[in-house]
Image (cartoon, rainbow, N blue to C red; front, side, top):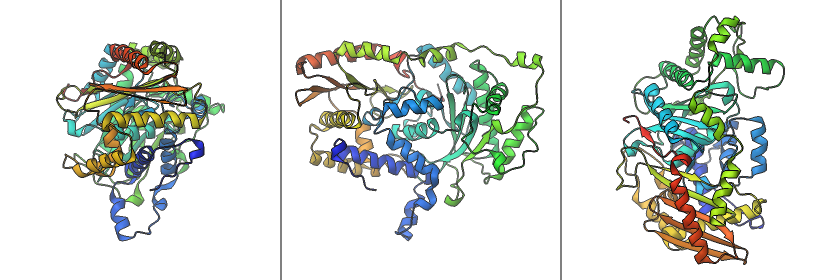
Length: 524
């Protein structure tokens, strides 16, 4: 893998380019597993593109575009896809090795929704359960063993893939994924369904090591139960509504649907059980069934498929008005709070934080322990990030790249004491030499830049950089946090540091409404 930076459009440091290459590599493993290594050993000239296909190419572009995130492009996407993240920080998630969360949300409501996932989705074969909106996290439930919890880079791959799928709003997806930092040698199987395609784009993601038809049925039923408990309408009524829009030409399908490859003579269903049985039989026909726990056997690379079920394919029979009234539900408190959180109010919230530090931009990292984890170890943390997207006066790609490049240099200074190329690569060599602590195969040794940014600085520190007499860049860290901010150069470094410290105190005080402050496990 090779990355080339065009200096005319804004310089990118060696470490930043290395990070992009590592995510590119991880995305390929996410799709194909590390089985590709043995293929190249046998045939070094093999053309990998023959195995990747257009879906992988699109996934790579979606991932790398976030490193050069541009708000105008994001806005255009949001106009046509409600599931897209309408307030994304882009490169900040990679710089801080953190995931973005939907905010502001009442912490009690978020905790109760996490508990709902535990009560509804817990099972011998369920590894992870997530609720997401676009590429932003609402909540996640993981195993209690810290070594079995997801690395941030794996979460980035999952949420980028799911949050930018054009067919998610109208489809259930059931597909194999390889989580490179969890186990790069085999596939897990992910079920996704949009619980609220009309208003919020709230989606559920359930991951298992079992790819059997029975497991799909379990996840399908769990998603229906979560939808019902949140006060969202049944999928049947949503399907009817969206089908009506489709018939008038207001909503064009972009995803693969089964009518393209199978006779649609059975499109009318008497009840949901018949519909579900048909879906399961189709999925069963598209791949081998396996049973058992843990990492499921890998499909042959040539047989890897993305299985979809499209509710718009089947037009339901007209239902009596009494049945429609019975299915009408009222939004629960969590969905109501989520709708409010997704209103265009983030700019006002961010303005208050920016004014507090006299800053034009900042990005904040917060390390929060997963419930039950030892606070004497860096394992068992869910790293999250928060901050506004780059906007005026950083309106072009070049100026935005400049900011991220400076932030990364500040990050290396806090961790290594220097941002020089030599110091950076000495640290990367150290990470590569330590290897992985678990028995499963992963790609940690191949992705030292990810590991370096995931590891918090050892001591409290402050650093700053002032260039061109225009901007003052400040970086500071403490236990469980990092902050990078851009202030006008008229602010003196000592004053700027004090302003940033004031902002940190405010953000830590608002932690419970801005972040997933109490990540739960299946044993919670």
